Length: 331
Image 1 (tube, rainbow, N blue to C red):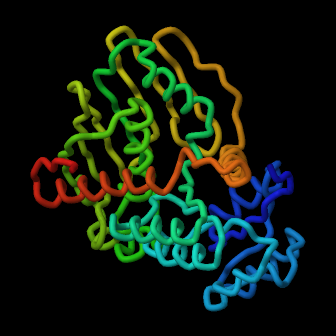
Image 2: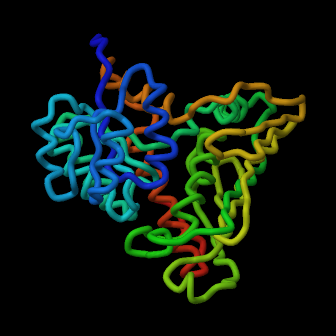
């Protein structure tokens, strides 16, 4: 197994890259920040100075494809608005780079298929930025639920909402939808990893719009229900006008709950048997290190493109249920 650190280039230098990923890359053991892709000359210079980046590691969206010639960059991390994910993942794969793509993977199933196919054709790995799969409290939820520590699961409640948003997140073309695509996806993914099961059907209701002008293109809030095997039901909600951050699982012989469940730090958990006592970790550092090790060891990422595609398929079914008022079976 190769021992050198793998170089990562961040594509898109918004708040997530600057506030989470770049600091995480100062803590990683198996990868490091080797390059950036930005449309802003000002950001380029600021990042070059702050992270001591070479000029040849800095690209813009027009010359991005020439990253192929840069042997110091092994992984491209796409941190752009949702609607741009597919094109840049395909371009990164064609530039012979492994790829991490932020969630949601894309805005359509067709885009997901295009991304997976491009990476396979290039012989490169694709991973989705599901940081919570590396967070101890959420990992404990996976263990408790999938191993039926409290017996068979009966009911799940998952909520994630913010009380503010702006910019591309309320532009349907760039975001693909509203809070469901942005933070509701955490609920969908959590239901899947808490149970180890895939939903069979969904129903959904759009919430009341308080600000019709701001949310003219996307939902302001949404509630949806997921039917899983063995009669398990998940009740979920997501909003851009109300703070929510909870995951609760009720089983035959007990329950477990995270509140808050999905933050970058400060996750807290409790079970019917007592508190969950786990350390806080730098989720993104663990996530990126794991992908670097997957590449070095030649093993599939646990948060692969196929995993991302499953969530997008469910999100699309939820929107169809919301728009038609019908129960939508997930094929």
